[in-house]
Image (tube, rainbow, N blue to C red; front, side):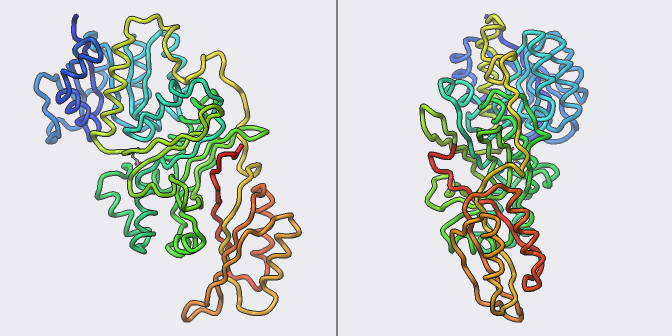
Length: 440
Ligand code: HSE
């Protein structure tokens, strides 16, 4: 059989990794795919830059349009990242009748609905395993392996940079800014690290996971997104003293009135397996009604782990090249005309437990005032920890863990607490989830 010819857009970390894995495992890959897979054309921004892969036999260009318009290329592998020009190039490739494999989470989360509709019309595949959690085959798992389940919720550590920062803050007592610099040097952070630390990258990935888990369109603009930049070393330490770890979680859950879609720092009991996922590693916990809780762990970034997912998608595409488009696995797991319009809940309507840290003036009656405000709003306290005043300070840190309450009620309580003359500054609030089996 003729080899399947591939064109690659982007020869950076993931692009070079993909060329290397395809070359290294060529025999095994063609035995799996049933055809030889050959990279024939690749676009790179700077052709003079040294590459981490051999480009022998590959036609190189700095004009990506040449690759998407090359009639020889059957599958375009988009590894440039970012919204544009990636979106336009992918739409052009689809228009030209080519299948697409991409690792681009931002493009899929923001423009996936448009891209999948175009692909559906043309009868071509768009595969995006590498867009979420790097090497962990989480898309295939949810879309196919768990297809018999009603997915109830999922929770993921899906940004390695933030997980690395939080781990180092806990293990070394390091400060946020110093660890961020290290994460950048290690090459895990996005080109603009704000995408990592402000939770945007995790929200892109969560949006994709929620769509395939619940059969809803991609709705990145409705995801609640909060990053880790306000988390201090002290919060990490106090959480630990109370038996919790702080992780940046992406959470998607079917609640009685809609779908929760939120990324924020979260306290998790330290005995949970996911609380012990450290460093740049990723993990996704998925609860299906039939299977129960399941967890998937692995490298969420890096050249070879991400290439592992890209190559698996290429093999998948090659295997089904001749299949009737109507009999392929749907892009978003559910048949396109069967997507649900369940609303995404605004954060005010989300119910969660809380960690609150306040700075209280050390005088009688302060705690009584705070607990009265919480009690009047029906907020039940789970634990309180009052620390010694720190040297040179005339206020003491008080940490309160609450039971579950609607976010809008907690907002009212925080506004009232901050208005007390006995409380200094702002209240620090971090959401807390027990992630137990029955979280419905
Ligand atoms: N910046 C991302 C992370 C890379 O830190 O997880 C992988 O998507």
